[in-house]
Length: 454
Ligand code: UDP
Image 1 (cartoon, rainbow, N blue to C red):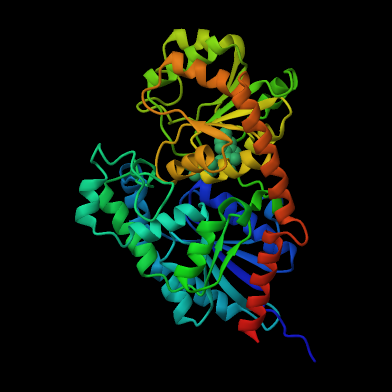
Image 2: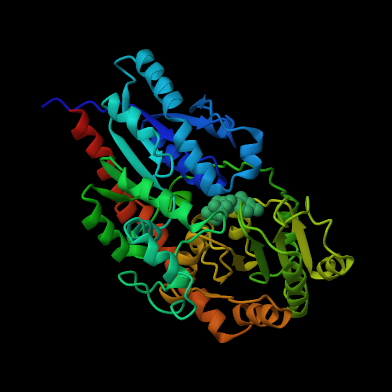
């Protein structure tokens, strides 16, 4: 029997933010390695540029109608809502052009869009192409969004602020408590519920790809499979399956030389990802605590991450003195390389999903200091489900910072966490190898495209 021909081109639509772009480009690499050509449709904001790593990808830009003042003043939530209100037509035009160009050897197999770029759905449907959602967060955060999109908003808006409920488990989301729910620091709760509702209730995709793996989130993945009523493909962690350097900021590689001089598993790596912010007073308490812990530390201080400061100029001289002895500061690090480095023994993280997967992927235990959104969900799982980290809650104070670092680097408890993290690292690696669960899931996804196109 003649084998069904698979359509060869896949169109990707990433959210223009580091934590979303990175896994989408990794997905592109994974699909390219099994024979698909990749077209990335981006908005004009925060674009990935074509580099040698993506020389075979085609990049197309669709215009958006956000002004400079929108970009400056809209929080992340309003930005996403506005992007979805304004990009539908330009995406339709772009997809229409692509379809006109296509020949029989290179026609479009599907459009894979980040779940937050849901404007992509209408045109994809109109052109009768198959549309696939890609979730760059954990499966558990996806479950939360699905649940929160359907709550009674009036009741929820009151309950979520009730101090007595904070430590109680949210019904149906065990072990997540009210305080762990993915609410956002980037805009009002009403906007967040609106966004979740638009993402979830307008979804028409025929399948969902998740950058996760069954050995980490089996029950959340089962929940999704049951509730979504379309196939769910957990194919992660993509950074192990298909590394694809897609940093939107310039990486400072001098920190690798600095790490080269240090003892194995001795360094605390500190990074809060691409969006989280930190107050000056917290920076100072951290510097004191880190300095008193006597553990060397590599600290990423992203320009713009300290409110009302370009970079570190608003910090007092005392800060510079404290970090100069045992610390090293960069504006942006080659994070995956840092986590792989033998000198790194612990990760102080905001617990973004990519950082979480990258840390587990290297067997590095974590001090969890979530800032907003799904980071709180990930932190809860790191602490209470996988038990490879612990949360540092409440006001930052030098004594608690010092204690946290010692807990991870000196105490028996930290050594246990490290052992468990190494155990999980091995499981993650096995999952993306031939025959592993994520490897098979990717295979199933590709086979499903063959069936659709036959
Ligand atoms: N990252 C990096 N260098 C840094 C800090 C972060 O390359 O100095 C990368 C990190 O490896 C991860 C991404 O930025 O892939 C951050 O994504 P994450 O989901 O952890 O957090 P977000 O930025 O979305 O809050």
